[in-house]
Length: 330
Picture (cartoon, rainbow, N blue to C red):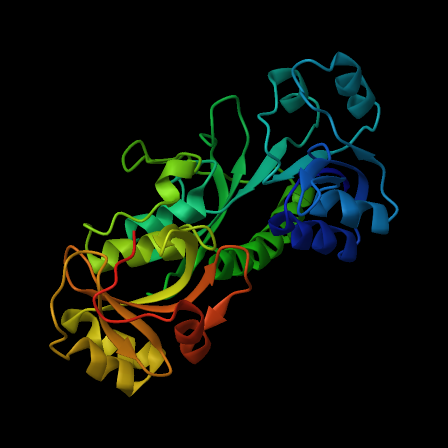
């Protein structure tokens, strides 16, 4: 089939590669405009644009679809059978949605209708969902409201973060989209309307959400660190400290921690550590990190990045922070 691919971040690259590798004719790629990134804030193309150029595909990077009538005409002239959209970053207007004969299909990283919107992976982790997945959905004017063609689920582990889940979901999206194209090529594909119950919205992550409120429980703080990885932040001795890996030392999750992190961690979860004020270091664990009091239970801080330094873990983290019992984060 003739496919016009829409995508922007690294998450969408495996899907583009899979469509090309399975013999579909990708007639072009639409991605977000180049952005200023990294040190020096130089203009850099999106990961999808980079891959499209590597594959020799034509690329369009419109700042605004709704204000670019010429682009709509150019895309129509491509005569694509289907549009495939994965994490593009703009809402497609009705005149573009109506172009392909076989429709526009979105690979969305959640089990719809749960977590419609911009940040489904982060919101699923923050909420403590045990399962997530991918939905291949027919696009319509509403935000992620269309009927679902294919859906697959994945479990969320206690120590999965936004990066590890994105990698797994990205691969699953690529596999399912290839399967979806096969179904569409064979004839009208049966879809199922989304349930009217269980709808939740995955709002964009705001900067103020990234700061850790130490009065919350260890489990909720851990979910923030995992969900907002690698951007969850607190303060240590007046400097920004990004938390990258934590473990909630909760007796009721001891067996689960043992299965994930080994028996020593299970024992640690059952240890009656000293109490302290939220954010206070109550113990220094040699080779592991800091044990910090929260509004409910203790949190093991295993990996972090101080200010502009490189990430460090375990013994190295203790050396960099020079932490002592009684000192506080936040």
